[in-house]
Amino acid sequence: MLEIKKEDIFSVSDVNKIVKNLIDQNLPILWVEGEVANFTAHSSGHIYFSLKDKASTLRCAFFRQYNIDSTFFPKDGDKILCLGKLAVYEKTGSYQILVRQMLPAGIGELQLKFNALKEKLTHEGLFAEQHKKRLPEFPESIGIITSPTGAAYQDIKNILTRRFPCHIFLYPASVQGENAVPELISGIRYFNRQFPVDVLIIGRGGGSQEDLFCFNDEQLAREIFSSDIPVISAVGHEIDFTIADFVADLRAPTPSAAAELAVPDKSELSLQLKSFQKQLNSRLTNQLLHLKTILKSAEKVLYQKHPRAVLFKYQQLLDETVSSFSATLLSFSHKRKNLTEIENRLTYLGSTRSAEKIHRLQMTIELRKNSLVDSSHKSLERRKEGFLEQRHQLLQLSPYEALKRGYAVVRQNNKIINSVEKLKLKESLEIILQDGTCQCKVESKERKNS
Image 1 (cartoon, rainbow, N blue to C red):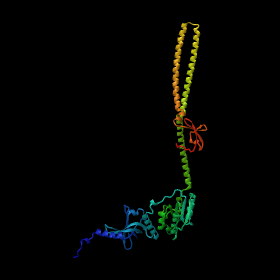
Image 2 (image 1 turned 180 degrees about the vertical axis):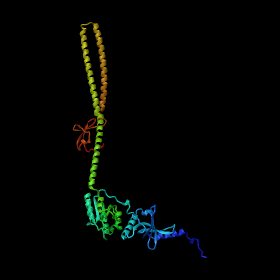
Image 3 (image 1 turned 90 degrees about the horizontal axis):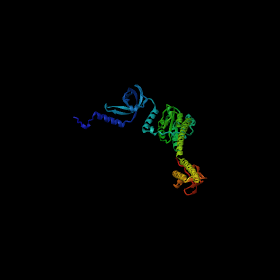
């Protein structure tokens, strides 16, 4: 009887895993052509179908993460091309194609190369948005890499000249044929290494897929990606897409559109500038009015609190006190005159009246004289005290008191100087101090920012 060792026995799952590992490790991604059968689009977004030819059938799965950007969905009976990886479904032990891209059959060798290069460069990150360089808002120089005889160059040149004043430099290059790729690459390197500009435009007018295919070259794509200068790709018409369009910093649907994207419109800029100028003038006017209002208010407060105004106030009080004191002196003088008249009258009466009447009159005169003298002395004392108080206040406000505290008065031609704006370099000035004056010259001046 045949002896079977336990370690030589495999489970069904083990067998399926072995087959799966063999397929995963040894079979690359491949293109498969066949006729669609049993096409099913699941609600999850996954698509399941079979590919068949006259002899065989192959199951396929097109998962949602790969088909989400697809624009082609076949129906049963259509012939298609599928790019995918052969895999084993361990549960049933069957193998299938995990589809990554699906195209109509007969699309041609150029399209297959385009799709393969696009997928390769996408995985490398050459099309990623974070690598896109921003175009300058107001470029001063623009390099154009295209055929000098094509309509594309004339269209770009005419639009750039009309829209915005900038320097235009052409690097002549073939845009189809075997010389196109090296000449286009040479143009990019020339502007990056020898003649820097602000923006590059690379492209041509419309044509067949074969005519435009030089812009699907991998080396050209990598040169565009490595350019330090922002690149605008403008290849063909709006419906044409090339690898250069995807790797460039900006894709323009046509050469004319590339010129419009490269520079702003000077007429629109002029309108914007006028609008900004109008807004600025309005804001400045409002600000000036506001500042003038503040200045007038400050001037009013300053005038009210200025030492000159306070000095004038006390000078007026002093004048009133002096006038009152003068009036008191005049009144006192009149009273003395009246007293003298009374004394003279008494002398006269002394010779005509009795001694008794004369004595009474003398007593009355003496009392009135004492009262008058007393009231006069009190009035004079009050006036004197008020006068001394006002004199003390005036002395405190006197400019000469300020000189004693270290301040000085600057004068030129007997005129007080109160601003550096009135001074000129090398002019002579007179400095008035507490105990004398001195002469000096202006060596420098600096206005204090308030």
